Length: 187
Image 1: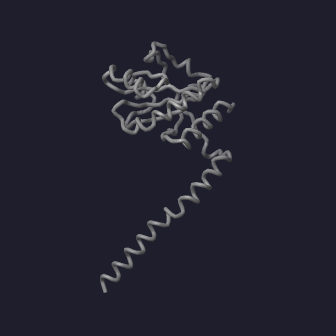
Image 2 (image 1 turned 180 degrees about the horizontal axis):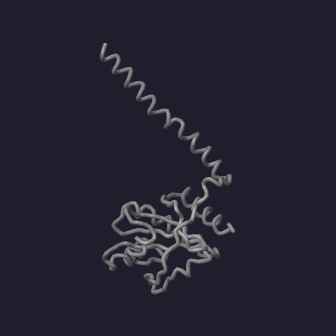
Image 3 (image 1 turned 90 degrees about the horizontal axis):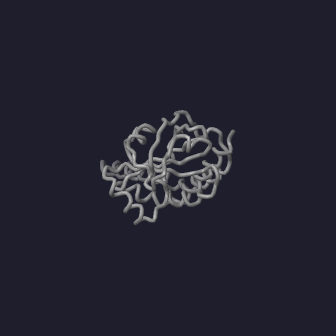
């Protein structure tokens, strides 16, 4: 008799666990439809101003906070040893390329590697051309670094988004670019 109760409980738990998986396609398709509609509750909030900084990227360009003002900037924090970064960086590159000729939108990355010699070869091997500033200190000032990768939007006033924009893939790529365009168009 005990076995029958255990078996019934197991079947119930298994079915209960499967219900969310069976409903997932419907939830995703309704989410896709909703993402086309503007939802003010899902708008990014920008609160924390970035600190003043003056740092050179790998190409020798000097970046300052003033270079970000008036633009929407995706800041990506990454490292060569980070496995999730290896998955995400090709999409960061694609976003960078798609925004190269879009006024007011840009990508800037912050690398956390301790050994500066690792980064140029990594960039070349991956075919990456996005700007890279090596600065753990700036990354830490933007947001406490507990994990990488991290993605933050900086609004035209130089404030960091409260919510992060972590992810990768085609849907993420389209969503991030759409959010950047929407933030730039906001008064």
